[in-house]
Image 1: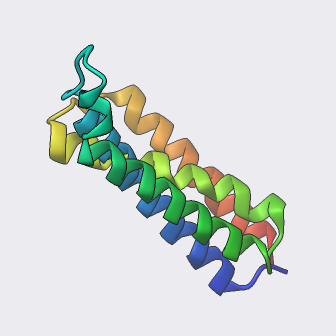
Image 2: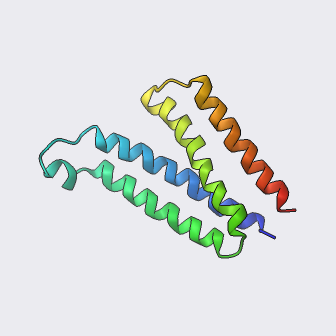
Amino acid sequence: MTPVSSIMEVVIGAIIGSFGAVFLKWGAVKLSRDWRSVAFNWRLAVGVGAYMVSSAFFVMGMAHGELSVLYPMVSLGYIFTLVWSKVFFQEELTRSKLAGVGLILIGSVCLGIGNH
């Protein structure tokens, strides 16, 4: 059985990782062919750092839970990323994107229910 604390650690990791994607996008739009645009791009550094921190949360969560329950919950990061893309980049939320989010949520709920 997977403890709630492990589930929460993975969800926190997914949230932090989704912010990593936001910072990578912000950094990517500032890139040019000049190597300094990568080397001194603090947004890219924050994005990579966020992914590293999120990985630490994933590892902590997986230490005491079932991989078959926890790893698919990493996909919750896609949901948060969809929200941030709308909030920060004014990207369009289409029916197909919302349907995909719905399927991810249904799958995560099914995994959680199957855990008990």
